[in-house]
Image (cartoon, rainbow, N blue to C red):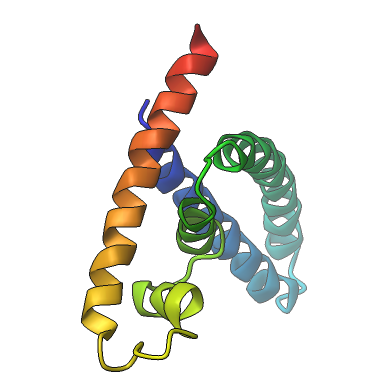
Length: 131
């Protein structure tokens, strides 16, 4: 599996956890017998999801930490682990540049290139760790 696929699967896992947490909050206010049963099932499922998330988070961050370029690490962490939007990531990485607002589009393209290089390098790291 490619690194980007793993990151996307991780994001899907985070989404499912969020939905399960929301379901639990809604059902908790119900106080019916079926609601209590559902809540118990949701909590069990949520615990399994949280274990999966912790395990995958550790594996992904191990790969990310091996990226040699600071900007690559930060872009991947911000985008996939923190769920930031591209504009926010661009401002995070390059916002202190004196010409940031005049050349914001150029900086945005640089973020995309950094992102692409990070994925390539992370794939290489994953491949090397299999051998």
